[in-house]
Image (cartoon, rainbow, N blue to C red; front, side, top):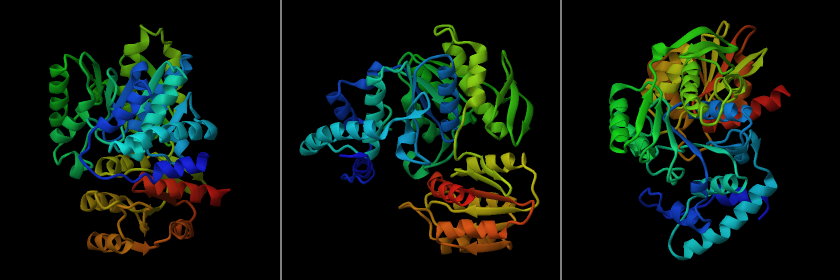
Length: 425
């Protein structure tokens, strides 16, 4: 297969649906001699912040001259963005070669009625690539949940928990405790567990699992993070013995995400002789596209892949860092989200609302979104099903000094970002 054929095969890999387990991906990786167990893995889960924390950690280790593989999802620009070593995407040639090699084994497993999904194939490709390239660390972001996620196939790891909130309730459970239990499934025996400040219910579950697995549990408190400056250019803060830490990611919650990364890096500091200034430089240079990302200052255009109530609440805080007159909101939402609460939050900060549809099986029809918004809002609402025309409508409505904000789903932002950059160029 060439590169385009490889991507098409992975993204359109249709398999019989059944119970979620890690059995099938383990069977595939067994064929490749368990590459995941040859890696030093930092395993990151949580509801929001995974991509940022992965970037902070990977970047800081890279600045300290370690080779670092990073696996994140979903992608914003192209599928190779999900698999990087030292911030360089896997090449098209290498991707296609590995995918072709994996396909032969997948088809052999198909004959045995062992069906491996597209995401499991992509995860396997990352593990095989990182092991063959002999990276010093592999920073692996969980796709969803944790316990039965495709990434959760290693014998040992450093488990890292970002903020846990209600999301994917139809799959992970309808309480924080149930969701934390699913995410806590990444904790292995005798691990060192690191956690963002969690709600009481989630924190208690993670502590219990850690105790049952003879693992230490390290969670920081929000008041340990002293914000010195927070604006549209990023944050400056103190955390424990780290002073005057600067990050370019916008929003005070990113200082908390960076503090979680610092806990992990501080744990590794002695064994791997990490330099504090290089750690700070790694944090400063970390990027996370599609998350409170400013694409243009005139006109002011910001995009964010917020997709649940918790991340929408973070947007409220983050956009206050920008100066603008009116906020022109471009928005859409998947069906399986808490529509009422999210719509009320996002309506509160917007002046004019442009609704469109997401290129995903779980998309919400634009007419449904319009009706939902009209029940709670008397603001100007425009329904534009075509995403490119929806972007054009936001540009048309924005006057001098206004801000355009696009949010609602990473699947939406993937398309919107491309459309906006093409128009700006």
